[in-house]
Image 1: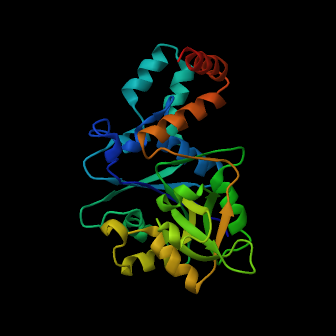
Image 2: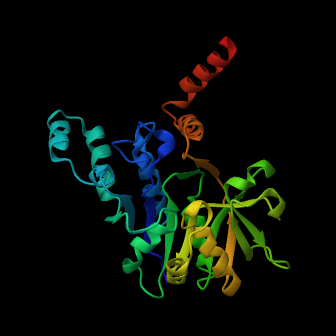
Image 3: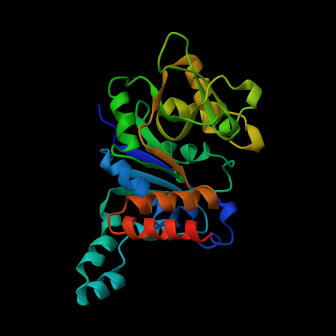
Amino acid sequence: MKIKKAIISAAGYGTRFLPAVKAIPKELLPIIDKPIIQYLVEEAVGSGIEEVIIVTRQGLHGIEDHFDSNFELEEKLKTGGKTELLEKVQKPARLAHFVFLRQTKDYPYGNGSPLLVASNLIDQNESFVYMFGDDLVLGKTPAVKQLLDVWQKNQDAIVLGCQEVAREEVCRYGMVAIKKGTTNQIASVIEKPELKDVTSNLASYGRFILNKKIIEILGKKKLGKGNELWLQDANNEYCQKYKALAVKIKGQWLTTGDPLNYLKATVEYALQRPDLSAEFKNYLQSRLKSR
């Protein structure tokens, strides 16, 4: 069996970036010269995904436009002989087969709701990739590919991408506890726990392989912390009945969910760019010396 579909959540309001995201989705904020969400799509496609389902919020159309053709712009670049820029502009629409869905006000707020929106596009026995629209992973092997490699040998399980975090940060994430006697089977997942309730420093973040059972659990879940519908609450219920595996992703997890971490992600990607890294590094060093 092969997983062909990925669902990307892009339905949040990005309130920590207002007023910048008043008229555009947060996922279109650029990391240098590409929007955040294009990095996610490229990661999924580079891992073998063929169909990308993006769940957006009402009132904004920028993500759909980004992954569509722009005839006027493309003609201008073509007639101007700017072939390299033309290829960059045309690339997003050619990455995958896209489906765009709206998360309306009828759904509760929370990172589990996009899965309810996309439910009809997932078959009963089908597994799929789920990605949060503000988590990036910088590494040699795409994070999604690492999850898929584990899932291929455990197709009855869901798979959660994880990394270890500092103890003082555990209250910010879904924290995973591993079953005794196993190396990666999940015993429980607690969303943003109190420090006293934490039994590990292994955090689950925005990379998952899920199945239709998770969507069915979400459809029956009561709202959790902050009156939101949390995916990790459903994952916790799932692992009490079925197999759930944790994968420590090899790569640098970079969240872009707030301005400070967004800036950190931009710096990390800039330092990886052959056309930018040397001069940018010199600039950073000179700034540090001048302070």
